Image (tube, rainbow, N blue to C red; front, top):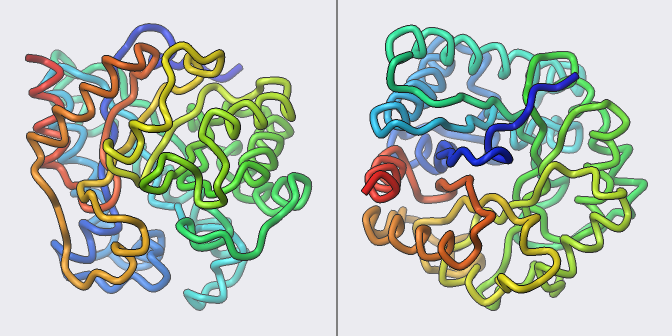
Length: 314
């Protein structure tokens, strides 16, 4: 039976941050198709990933918080294999290797900070079949279930606490992913992204999307999140009085207030103000008391998680 999730039992957990943008802009790494899992092929790449997870875990521990670490596998699904020159079998195997890497970092760091650290939850991270910001080829729920099956099953063979689909732009893909997780018997999280008006890229209101997924899956998802959007874009979607409000447990925010279209065209990183972003995330949490998972997405790095930990502790 999967372990209980501390974020659903009163614990406030931080997350890691914008792995891909951190690698590209701060470490000058070429990431084809935004695919961080490709770094698993080299010693240098693995060292960069280990460093990233190590510094986030230590930062959370320094503030006395636990953390959720997402495996570097947002693009590690079959549809992206040709774009990075990998076979589908190699991409599927990369999900298990990514978990092993993160788990090894967790174990080594926790030996040093066990007196400070809260729980460290490892999530098997999946990403959308399409762009993430733009709805192009739209799957039915059943098509999405089949598409995400191999990646979810690969994670189910490890000791991940849950699997998470990040940056979802329409409800049907979330439905299929949650069904695939149910088939594999692993807890799941569906994380939508929103545009500047608080709606999903396909125009669906956030609350309607959450409700649609729960209705289609008998409420199987452990909880829901929003990621890859700035707090001022997420705010219009929130309604603390709504029936679905307790199901929204996590927010991973972008550093920039720019729209998705503007971010796609940007050639320089907009990393915003870490202290201000932390304050804005705390304001969202005050409005939505069920939110217990807070962290960063594109444009953020360990500085933003450090500022968030300090704000939460304060």
